[in-house]
Image: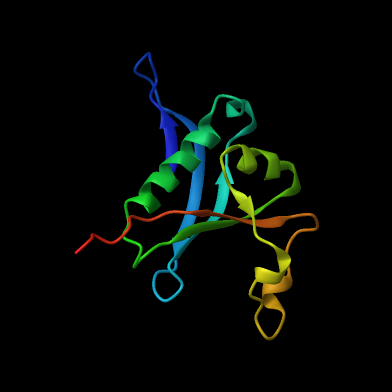
Length: 124
């Protein structure tokens, strides 16, 4: 998802940020945030928060049969940002690693985080 701000003078819009995600669907029922980026001159204006709220809203509209939570691997300098938005850390013992250890590779100091989402199934 790209976030652009229209020009007030009728010129070209301004690029404010991008969010890349993947929906894993059943059986995992997880949406993973792969990348959130806001250019340095656009930081501190709330564009990162806006992108995160957009993806949470998108995931929350999905039925729980398709998506029950969002996940991401936060860089050390972004952990506080995600915690302020309500994300929680995933304990190491809950992380599923592949047999070859591929899942274990990540940036030093980065942590996995999650947020529950999805619409409950309609009551019968």
